[in-house]
Length: 94
Image (cartoon, rainbow, N blue to C red):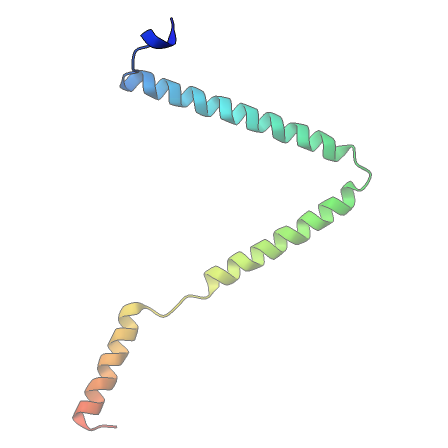
């Protein structure tokens, strides 16, 4: 089949092509990761790399928790406080 006579894939063919593409991507990514791990295992400073990686992961985790822990006040709550303060000024309670 030549490129000029290739038909457009229908819905089922497209799904199969997408799944096959994702599977190929996963296999190539895993292959690259395994090759990288083999290279790391052969190094003499592996323990130092592991300690550095652990420290970096802890720092990233701390940053992520800090981002999530600081929760701004609820928008409606802030609006309600503003309304309450304006009513108090209008009523002369201040």
